[in-house]
Length: 277
Image 1: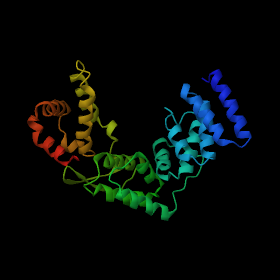
Image 2: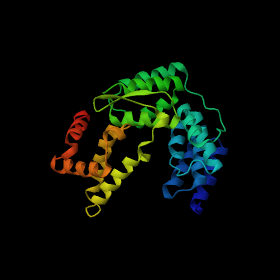
Image 3: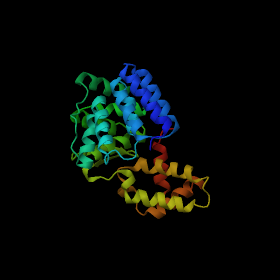
Image 4: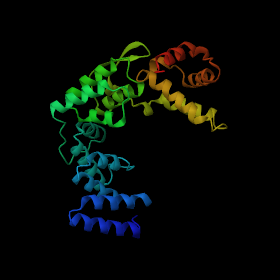
């Protein structure tokens, strides 16, 4: 739904664009979105961002839409932002997960740029979302090779390793990958692995934690956060390290509250030993 004020700002933006003033057009549309959401405004603003070489902002804006695939206007513009940002890896994920054809051809960054992205990423002490998104500019061979090097490096934060694993899963990669999990060298095949949020054991543990703290909601976010840390550290080998979700959840709460992990004491100690201080 587009309000009257938003329609006026859209009209102003169209006049700005007609006069070649993209900066003013963008400012008017950004102002329009500060009031309330309008898909028409989002789509127009994304187009202007792309025209003004602000493709990273176009991508960030369109990704906020709850459904990128059912509306052809949204889907096509989403694919356009992938093309403009050279996000080949994400484009391949979209094709694998949805079965949809891509209306635009998406190319990776030039090889020299890809090498620079990988070097810079390895040098980062703190990886930002933008740093990680740059990896989507790699071609598939470079991405798989780089992913394996990250998974064999015990120093990156578990969140980076988790993101790498899930990217490989979304790509449907059939190769076997090695990964360090709490100091143990494990292997997994992405195409045969579930995303974390779809893992039954993960869902059951989170549900058990939610039930346990339903009468103490102020503690729930902290407990969910710690639970995600622990489970994320064990991913993608949850089936190996977690036997029974309810007892795991109960023992984890006991460990967090009293440092008594009961039958899972040694596992929890090992997890926290390998988490960054």
